[in-house]
Image (cartoon, rainbow, N blue to C red; front, side, top):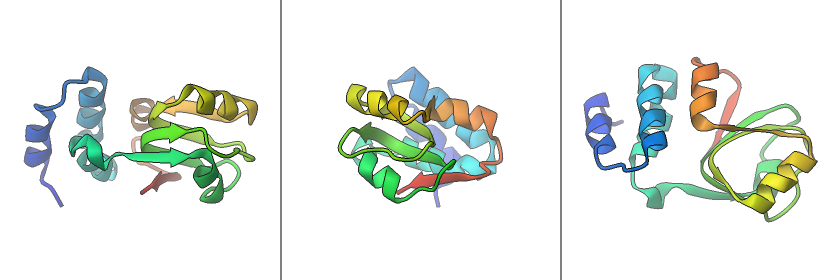
Length: 122
């Protein structure tokens, strides 16, 4: 496990101000430390997840967090709350068709400080 100091030193290398703010907010709560660690690492370690995979690993009403990009391959058959760093346009349309909710990772960290009921896809 990385220390907070090491994660903070990794933040200096990041150029995206939204990502930097997300990592800082995640570090404030111990429940989100694993998310801060993953986001502070190289972008090569970020996930690309298709909607079919999200649908397979979730139940109706779940909050799913993707530390990377959501892609549009497959269909979403359940109403979910999806938190992601990035979502492709076609995936965004399919998510809206299934009446699911889309939020950023930063919004979820601020709204749910204890990380209750969040499934992080790895």
